[in-house]
Length: 159
Image (cartoon, rainbow, N blue to C red; front, top):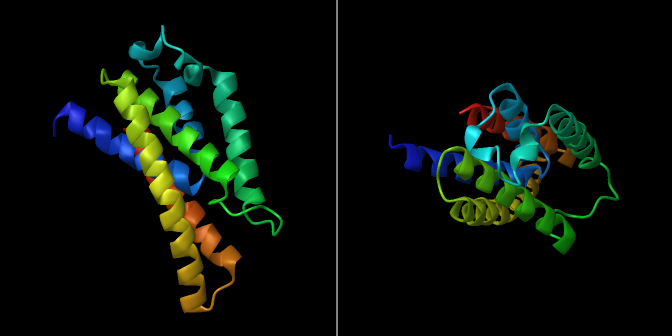
């Protein structure tokens, strides 16, 4: 598969993960960028994702999000602030992946942000529908969604 195509498939995938869990996508990407820095990021504003303390902070934020998602007083992911956070997350990981692979960072940001926006709504709907259809408590479906986001995000981030 061509490098450009592979890069943009990863961008779409990581944007999708960002729509599921806003902090998981940048946390996973940063984790791998610390282990294997991308030279294309060295002189960009996105180089911070290669800093070990940033990776650690993102992992803590992702863990907090996993817990917070299960709390009853947290607003739906489709509310404006929640949606915006996911779109920004998708755009950042998209731009980072694109730039790290020698592709257009603006195109990566747009694609990642759009994927995050679409998956935010898709997985919100799926989580509700699956829970209702199966008669499962929301927390059970949420944990499955966490695992899907973690496993797919891990595979996509490591390349």
